[in-house]
Image (cartoon, rainbow, N blue to C red):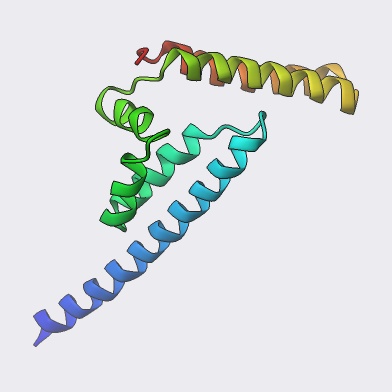
Length: 134
């Protein structure tokens, strides 16, 4: 009897975890969709996160995302080799540059915020450009 109770709790916990991953995956897809239209918001990193969440919650949505005609190849390359296409790397560079220019010109921050934002952006770009090229 104790086995059955444990199995029931595990089943319920599994459903909750799957629901959390499904919700996160859908949220990441939404952020990725917004990123298609906003140059300072990245698309593919959110879709990579969504694919990971769907792998733990919905085979159907994972297959849909990996089979997508525009994003599927990039996601499959990332999953197989951690690779980013050169176009994606250049878009990350362009988006970061645009974001920095907008930050400095519209906010007129002091040197400390500029250094912090530049450091985060350079760290992100360093990561992107050290990944294999797809």
